Image (cartoon, rainbow, N blue to C red; front, side, top):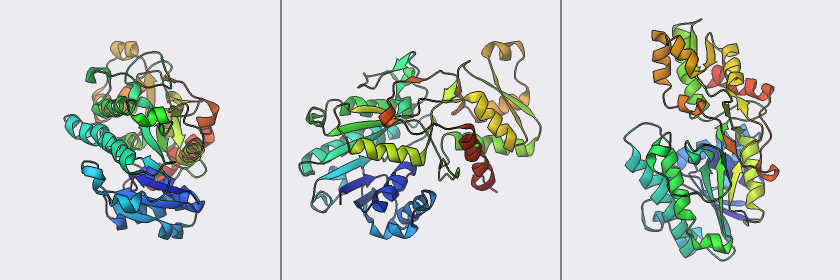
Length: 352
C-alpha cells in the first residue's frame, strides 16, 4: 500500500485524484483550507463521477493546511511518517484583474513553501508532483517544449494566473529535488468532466464560458454571436478520468524528464466546440477572423457577450503547439465525448 499526501483536496483535480488513490487501497492524507465536511463531500462526489464507491471517502485522513504558514501549518511528524508521493494540486484560479498579489502569494510563493516543507520533512524515497498548467507558456509563439521555463514579464501572459504558475515553475527549477530526480511538474490542459458521462464538478474553463453563453441564449434565443478566433484555434480538452489515470502512471515511473504535458495530441477545434454548444443551446456561435469583424463590426448584443467572456475569449485567439508524448497523453476527446461534456453541463450543471 503506497502512501500519498494530496493538497487542494477540495479542488477538481485533487478530489478526483484522491478518489482514484483510495480506490486502489493506497493510504491518503488530504490537505485543504476548507473544512473536512466540505472536502469529504467533494471527494465523495468525485468517487461517484469516477464510478467508484463514495463510501471509500471514509478511508481518507483530512488535515487543514495553509500555504503561507511555516511547514504549511502541518503536524509534519504525522504527515511525513513514511515514503510518500506528495501531490501539490492547491492553487488560486482567477482571471480577474488586480489579483496579482494574491495569485503570486498562493501559486508562486505557496509552491515554494510546499517544496521546502517537503524537502525538510519527507522521508527518503518520497517524491513531489507539482500540478501546473500547459498555459504557463503565455502568448509565446511556436512549440512549447517540455522543459523548465525562463522568467517572463507579466505582459507576456494572457492573465496574472498564467504568470503566477510560470513563476512557480521557475522557482521549482532551482530545487535540489530536480537533481535528485524527486520532482515532477505535470502541466494540464483544459480540464473537463468524465469522458463516459460528461459529468463535471467544475465551473472553470469551458464551463464558465458555457454558463455565460447559456445566460444570453436563454434571454435572447436565436441570436448570432461571433468570436475572434485564430484560424487554427483548438483547445486541449482533457477529461478528468483520463487525466487522473495518466498522472498516476507518470507518478509511478521515472522523473528523469521532470516537466511533462498531460494533454491530448488531438485537440478540439474551436468551431467543433461551438457546433456542440449550438446543438444544445438556442444560440449561434461563430468563429470569425479579425478581418471579418473589422469589415462587419460586432452588433451591440455581440459586443456585450464578448465583454462578458473577456477572460475566456483570449484563449480562442491563439494556436497552441505543446510537446507531448504518448505515455502522458490522456485519450482524445472525440465528437461523442464533446457532445456528452456540453450536453451534461447544459442539462445538469447550469444554474436553474
